Image 1 (tube, rainbow, N blue to C red):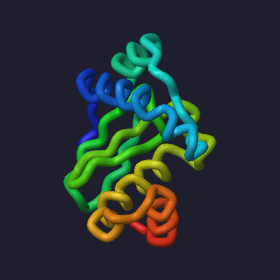
Image 2 (cartoon, rainbow, N blue to C red):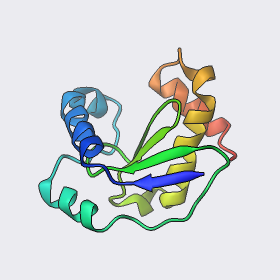
Image 3 (tube, one colour):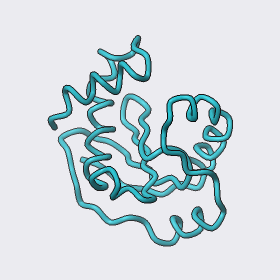
Image 4 (tube, rainbow, N blue to C red):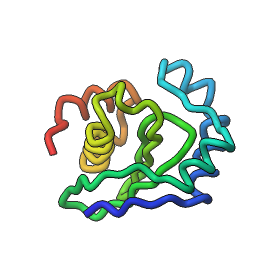
Length: 125
């Protein structure tokens, strides 16, 4: 089951990580959403709506800055919902991050690009 939450602490932490890792994120040519107080307030007030569920206990945090999706094993995903329809929708991004969690023990030693390729090959939830 996925529990969807907004946490100011998690959101702020991901804002910091975005700035800290900006050079690396740009080198990977990832879509980046920069910290923005108005987006933070908007997300705090109006969270995205989805009832997508999986058979794992996962917490999904809505974040306003970073990339579209991230994960932290064993049970957390982070979704930045801005312009997410460009990727095929919110559900697709959530599935992708859940797949990262499911395969994290097998992909631990891989590079970012290798992890993405592996997850894309095994992305059936």
